Figure (tube, helix red, strand yellow):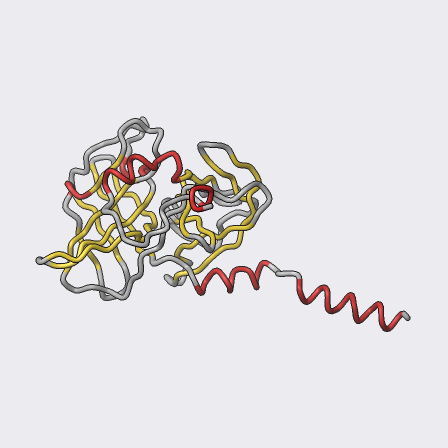
Length: 235
């Protein structure tokens, strides 16, 4: 009887997903990332961006990324026009400079999301990730995707510790990630939020895309088959 009970316990334990196993599953569907460098009169800021749209045109391909609007705000928290440069680094061979008119951010401060648009003829191997306006509930799992200290893309598994209509708080710090401001929070359905705070040894705070929905739909091109509708709307 004891041996049988021990076997049942071992089998049950094998079926419980560990954080490492969850992170590995997240890596297979992780969004395409870029690092962001913003140089303005207020100084230099670094963060992460996620690709969410691709639009083919006669002059090339337009790529759309989301990041945190905090990269484009001054010390007082208000939006400031970029005076020098915005650069997206996708990999070691692809670094794209943005026109300042291709940076879209809501000036109210409530929508903590910025859209970065860049046109290129040298298209890197990137894929778009759907947007989700129905975030996970408290206690459920999600992932953060970002860049580690070695410069490689990685994921961090999280659980929702607190959620409101404005933001969400994870349960673990983001120490494996560097420059994680603007990093995407996602589930198997797509990206539902953007990291707005990721201080060392503190839980990450995530801005929800649901609050930015009208802003996003105003500046992002529509995509056939895109999962921008919430799960509630699809039922």
